[in-house]
Length: 351
Length: 69
Image 1: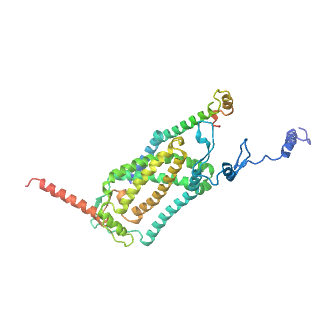
Image 2 (image 1 turned 180 degrees about the vertical axis):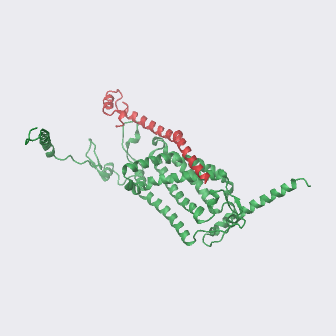
C-alpha cells in the first residue's frame, strides 16, 4: 500500500455499502405488508368475519352459547372443529384474574391472623416440670412421616405458587430465561414430589386415625374456641379439636389435590379440555386453602405455643406442658402405666 | 431433627424414583398421544386424500420430524 492512497479494504467496504443501498431502495419503496389482525377469521368462500360480533351474526345467534361453538370438519379429529370454547374463556379469566387474588387473599388472611395472634397473645409460654420430666409424644416413625408430608408439601406449595404468582413476582426479578428454567424445574419437582406427598399423607393418616376421631371432648373444645380468645387451657386428648380439624382437612384436601393432580397429567385427549380446566380449578382452590391452613398450623406448632415444637423435633415434651395442653392424654398415659405397674407387681411371685 | 433430615432425603430419593417410574410414564403417554395425533393429521385420510396422491407433497412440506404442521 502506498502512502496517501485509500486502503483497498476501505474501497471494498464503500462498494459494499453502495450496493446495499442501491438494492435496498426499491424494497424500501414498497408499501408495508398489511398487519395481520388476529381477530379476523378469513374464509375464502365468504366475506371476512371481523371479530366475535361478526361471528355471532354469521351464526345467527345473539350471545355466545354455553356449549362449545363447533364448525364442520371433514377430518377424523373432530375436536379441531371447535371454534370457540366458552368455558375456556371462563377458565382463563379465573386462572389469570380470580385465582391469583384468591391465593393472595387466603394467604394474606392467614398471615394477618398469625400476626394478630402474635401481637395480641404473644408467644404462649408454659411452666416447666420442676423435675424436668418429659413424656414421649411421637415415635420416630411418626416424626419421619410427618416431616415427609411437611417437606413435600412445602416443595409443592412453593412450586405451585410460582405458577400462580411467578410471572408477576419472579420473572421481572430474574428475567425470562432464568424464570423459564426455574418454572420448568419447578414443574418437574411438582409432578414428582406430588406422589411422595400422597404416599406420606396416607401413611400419616393411617397412623394417626384413631387419635383423630372426634368425640364429646372435642365439641366442648370447639364451643370454648380452644381458649384462643380467653387464654384458658381447654382440656384435650392427644390432639385437640383444632388439630383434628387440620388432620381431616389435610387428609381430604391432600387426597383431592393428589387425585386432581394425577388426572391432570393424563394426555389431554383422554380427559378432555373442559375436564382439565375443572380439575385445575379444584386443584388450585384446594391448594390455596391448604396453604393458608398450614401457615396457621406452622405458627401454632412452633412460635405460637412454646414447647410444642419439641414434639416433632425431639419426640418428647415437657410433662407440665403436656398436662397443660393435653391433660386427658396425660391422664390416659399415666393410668395405663399405673395399671401396667400394678399388673406387673401382681404377676410377680411373692417373696 | 434427625427425622427431618431423613425425611428430606426420603422426599428427594422418592421424588426422583417417582419421576423415573411414574411422571415420565405420563409424559411418554402424552408424547405418544401427540405423536398419534400428528400421524393422524398427516395421514392421507386426514388430508381427504385416501389415494395418497397429495400426502407425499404435504409430508415434504411439513416433515413430521421437525415438529411443524
